[in-house]
Length: 204
Image (tube, rainbow, N blue to C red; front, side, top):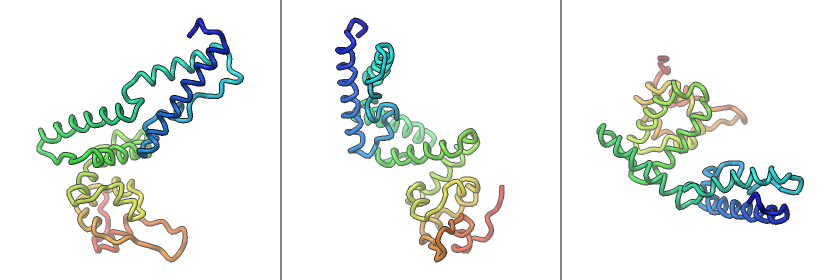
């Protein structure tokens, strides 16, 4: 590429940008756009005012990504399947429940990733509790992410009192969503504790 004249380099740059957009569209059709690095989702930056070196740097990064297995939806899916198989083996070895489908494992990954972003630097302290609460919901036939969304409830509130909610997950799974007549009133975990007659949430 370094030997290309700038007009030809620009053409190559635009072709790679178009290819990136095509791959993103495939991920998007499957509802997994976020699996594509944000800097590549809409192709490469407009090369109009770029120097030769800037275009070369952009092309180099893009081609390195495109050579990787996870840059295509098929390759990404295969990697995720291998991760699920490895995770299930670890779970089975410790006599814990395994994931029955890729979709279930995918929801788990999305939820845990979302919680990691929310907790930030505190994630190392909250990850075990999050997993324990997720497992408690799963044993009661629910997905924790979908459950908290249905109940309009911030999952962080459950995770901060995970021992209490692990014990009462069966009641929470069967709960009807709380709705408020007053607009803007958030729903708290304590509201569900009262609604379900579980008493005060015990602080640990």
